[in-house]
Length: 555
Image 1 (spheres, one colour):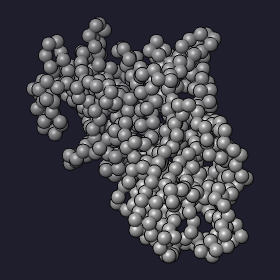
Image 2 (cartoon, one colour):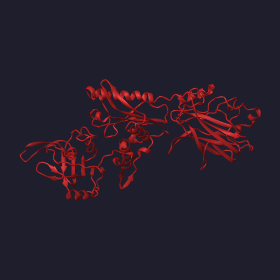
Image 3 (tube, one colour):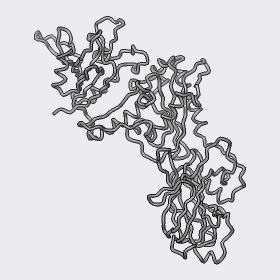
């Protein structure tokens, strides 16, 4: 049995036009000639993606036999026509005829209907019968399109299953702009099949990393906060750029994305021109947080399409201004200058002003430490509640009334408990959660906060543990820590603020910032779930409500 890899598109117009390259050009399309017979043809269709006609060479290179089958169905006049041909691209050679005359050969071979000077494809009933005998997927009665079958593909050391998964990811990361649902009937529906089983192709709108680019693309389409990039001399509008910032949990992009240069959280601009196929992910400054991604989409104006197309190498994966001259060179070079300028401004941390009071040195140390060490914990800020009495100190850590903390969006915050005379910031001896007399119940953080992906975006989760046993009412609040280490007191009008979504107690979820446990047990675990704000430091405070008062530790 011969292994094959089929690359197909259905619902397209197929490879029409004449089947001979020596037929004069006219109004008739020459798709068959351009794909099957010629190399190096310039595009003859509006918004066409190719420029050289060299890209199809990879199909032959992937085949160990250097051989492909082209199976297409197209309109010829007023009727549908099926065509089938085999093509091999081998090495050039010289052969002698019966008269010992040596003749050079290009190494290109065709299998089809042999005529005197060329090979025609099998057409109509012959093509349908041959395709069925070869086990090729048939066309539906009114269906058009093209399948290219690569004979005995060479995948190196990768298994067929690994390649199928890679191809599914590669489709999404290279073709996502034309896969979006908003395109309606012009949307590409990508599918991958392996041995009859469907391999899911990532949905761009729901795929981590990609959906940030999708959000930027939607801004571009709607004109929401879109920048027009200009060249000043000579004056020329180049295209439009839209940017989007999102929080994402730490993750490793798939191999297909890494091969495109995205190895961590995206901080790239996707370059597009008229066909809206991804040309390149152009890297910008790395964000200050591993969890803070930003993405942009730059789309060249249609009247600039030929300029950018001419800047592409045969692989169509870059815009190289050095291979252009004159104005074209200036326009493409200026594009990258303008993108760099815009990203330098966009990637900067947001500046938030606050009228809050000056924070103690410990809080400032927390803030600075979070930037240097990519983690912030519970620092040495002085407590808001009065210092503990000696009796309270003897009672131990089970009397802690409330806790808090500030985290940057780095996803790896540390939890360190400061020392005040060998105790915590309340002057109480540090100890693990233990049972205590009923009625003396509190709550404290347990472990590092972490990010969690959800349908509504990235969430920040802090685990807590009950100290003591009895009736516990706890309230959580969230706010933004500003540059001086204090909590923001007067948010700018219209700005987003973090908020507490709810609590988790085992399998139960409780909405709102307050949880009420009638019979809390020492060691019982609860989780506070917060919706953070991108590009900020989120502070979470947890307090025990006693006698309708909230007592916090301010850590």
